[in-house]
Length: 240
Image 1 (cartoon, rainbow, N blue to C red):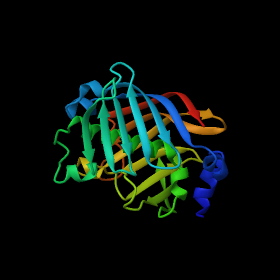
Image 2 (cartoon, one colour):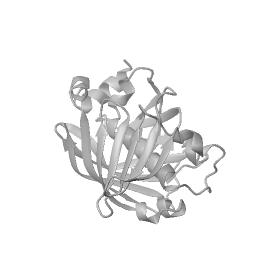
Image 3 (tube, one colour):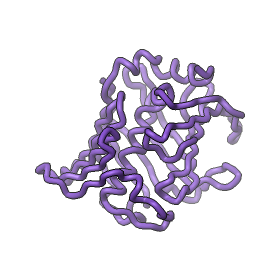
Image 4 (cartoon, one colour):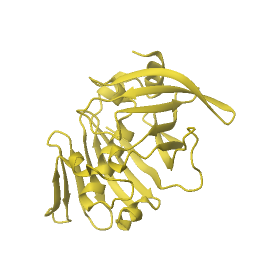
C-alpha cells in the first residue's frame, strides 16, 4: 500500500473499521446555482441519504416531496420514484446518456439524480474506496496553497466504478485529512473542478468531511473563487 494512503486510512479509523461497516447515513443539504443551471432548481435542498459502504449503491429521499433517487451499480440503473413508490423515471446504463454533452447541456431529472448519486457515494466512501480491487493510488508531487503544503494522492479508478473521471487528485494535510479534490466530470464536458473540504465532523472515530465547496479550476490549478456552483453540507451522520 502507498505510504500516504496508509497514513490517510490510519487517520480515518483504519482499514478494518471500514471493512466491518455496511452503511453510511446522513442528512445532506445541496446548495449553489448548479442545480438551477441544469434545469432543476428544486434539487437545491435537503435529502436523507443512505449509502452502501461495500458496493456502489446509494439512495436519496427528499424531505419535502418524498421523491427517491436510487443509483445501483449492480444493475447499472438510476430510478426515480414518488412518495408512493411509483416509478417516475428510470435510466438503464445512465452514463451512456451523456454522450456528446457540453457544460451547457441541460439534464433530465434522472440524469441529474445519477450525477448526484454516484458523486455523493464516492465522497462518502473515500478513502476506503481507494483500497478496492482495481483502484490504484500513489503519492505524487506536493501542492502548496497559501502558506500550506499538502500531500497529494493520485487515484485511478477502473471502468467498472462510476466516477467523475478515471484519474483524480486528493490533497491531504499533515493530520491526514482531506482538504481538496481535483477532477473533471465526464458527464459535464470534463469541466475542471477544485473541490474543497471546509469542515470535518468526527463520527465513531472517523473524521467525515461535512462541509464542501465545489468550484471551477483554472488552468494553473488555482480555484476560481468568484462563485461556488455547488455546496454540500452533512448533518446527522452515522456509520453502521
